[in-house]
Length: 484
Ligand code: SF4
Ligand code: SF4
Ligand code: SF4
Image (cartoon, rainbow, N blue to C red; front, side):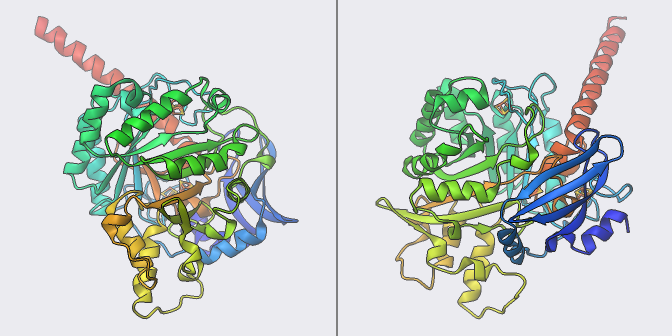
């Protein structure tokens, strides 16, 4: 058992304060870290022998963090491990046999290029590579090997819609049995290219649309350009095609915190939108300097939602997602009908059902409710899907809402907040239970926060550069031989 394995086994993130391992934000070396309670806050402290001491805010609400640990569901190990344990977490991804959770959602980054140059781009998009269909096929096969019947694949980038073969890749994922295919996009091609957008629409993917606010000042600060009109155009096009969409809003200190409530209201009212996902910005890639003790967190975003929606959603409506570490993501669902918004946790005690510490036995029909809630509070829950609508109906089967899954598919709205870790907040005891992975061209699965913080993204880019250079050389050499 590696040193990291012993950290995981002792479950160090299961109580506050605790010791764990993290990264030096400068050299990315794995170093010891300690999370301390300081007043109401939880703060990570660590020291790199070469680059000195670092402190970062883990949570502004230590009590809430501690309560959320009840929602830590035991993981289900993957069926296949692509790597062995050598150096210890997070340098053995993956997944390696120390990983504690299978992958609910896998990303495939089909390219590195983009039609924007966002100053905050965590992927550091730019020149690099386009994956081939054969490479994507191999990656999908790796996911099928690990998961059997994979639930969700999300095509991402760079900007995946500028890849010339994205549509074939979506079809390929469906042909290989992936249940739900998502496209993670800035929406510009959907707005600008109606012919292509119609072809995309025929494949019925779920669209994860970058949508940070309704003010151009927000767009300029986060994306470098005023894009609100084009984003609205893309959304209207999705509505015309009856495609389901999740709005994805990066939340940046001092930029768009005041827009959070307006975004929730906008999402509820727009016919294409089934969910909104807020993501405090990740401080990786191109993101500039910041104060790690003043970063945006999940409890803070929930506070904004409560205040700015005037109680449409309140803090107690949000419940941590149990399949990953519960501090990674909080979600709520609401039933929307004729402008009436009814958050599900006001109808049933979701927290109680998702308490994995008390571990109660639930008789029928409460067992059905628990099962449905576990599926909804998972990274594989897909907004707008019939499966989610059925789960919503099962969850409310004790309550007379008089709804059926087909009615409810467009009446369920979810609001979620994801707190991705960067090198400042990185915690091996959380990443080892990650259920969101990035598939790499060599068939590995790298937990998303490790991919972006440890150096895996840079390694993949370098490996692809060398691979493409080798392929060019081979082509030239073959052409030379043919000429002889
Ligand atoms: S994050 Fe998971 S796969 Fe990666 S090294 Fe840690 S335990 Fe292994
Ligand atoms: S954040 Fe997204 S849209 Fe912006 S440059 Fe990066 S990949 Fe492109
Ligand atoms: S990607 Fe990061 S924040 Fe999301 S589940 Fe994995 S470790 Fe947690």
